[in-house]
Amino acid sequence: MESEPKCTGTAGSGIKEHEITVLLVDDQAMIGEAVRRMLASEEGIRFHYLGDPSRAVTMANEIRPTVILQDLVMPDVDGLTLVKFYRANPATRDTPLIVLSTKEEPTTKAEAFALGANDYLVKLPDKIELVARIRYHSRGYINLLQRNEVYEALLASQKALAAELAEAAAYVQSLLPPPMTEGQIRTEWRFIPSTQLGGDAFGYHQIDGDHFCMYLLDVCGHGVGAALLSISAMNVLRSQSLPKTDFTDPGATLSALNEAFLMEKQNNMYFTIWYGVYQHSTRRLTFSSAGHPPALLFTVDAAGKASAQELRTTGPVLGAISEMVYKTGSCVVPVGATLFVMSDGTYEITRPDSTLWTFEEFTELLAKATEVGKPQIEELSRSVNEIQGGGPLDDDFSILKVSLG
Image 1 (cartoon, rainbow, N blue to C red):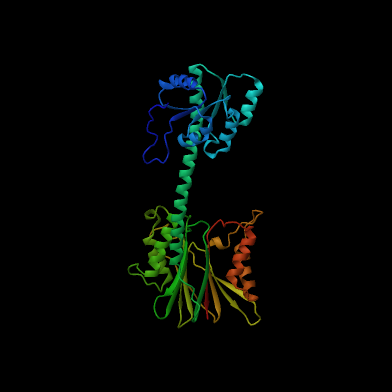
Image 2: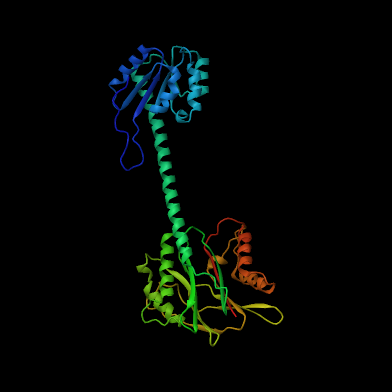
């Protein structure tokens, strides 16, 4: 016995509009007919009757009822045994069970509830009461189903988003320049984004036969927007596509970059940057910075003592003020010197006791690693992980090492 089913899906939502579906398992056909008549005039309720209790679990798997009415006393299969079967079956583990019985003994009721029944009615109950209980238990179960569907849809969406972010992160990584391992200038770097998509970017290349530029920028925030802005700025520098700009002049380069990336045109996002140009013929390094940490130029004296010179110029973050003129600083680079350019996420590390690792401590660590001949970047990365106590970093970790032989 079955009433005509209604549509159970909502196009495009991914979440079903579940209809109340009742499965009655009772060996007496007259009980099945009586319940069918009770529910026949009830809108939005589908009714199924099964007189063979041995097929109860199989049928429940097929029709997925929102409530099961289960007779207690039947030949061959005891009703309480079926309750245990329902609860052991994944498809009916949470389906509401209303036990129907001619018995009113408290011990029988207690056993039914202990095995997993949700309700107990002495048959045949009044129609008003039966319908009310069917709707009440079904409504709770449908809410559970829809919550689970929303959760599954959310997981699927997050999985798809994670895959897209991973693809985007791989693309960003592919834009970073490969290390230079031969020649007078050698480079290496470490980039550890705090999220899948960070806001840091860096690069280096020959401008012409005598000038080599290097830069590192740090966009405010993280995620897709920050990554897109950092890639855009990096591509402008790499392609030297700013009009009427001398890219061998760091101050002029940042002034032009500032006008090209004013924050009101970039969804109120800005970035800091350090930009330097090394001239091979004179060993002179010119540089300019916009709200960025200073670069560190390390040299080692005859006694093996390492010292660092901070290279920075004063200037606000890039994109904040229109028509800003950025200054250029310069120094002569000793033979064998090493330059480090980094983002603030490399040294602004919070210890487990909530104290902040300072820039001075960061500089001392690099100096000691230089003096004892340790690989500076590897030592820094290891120490930062220990200082923070493990786990993801609060900000992107970006550092560029340039050995100027």
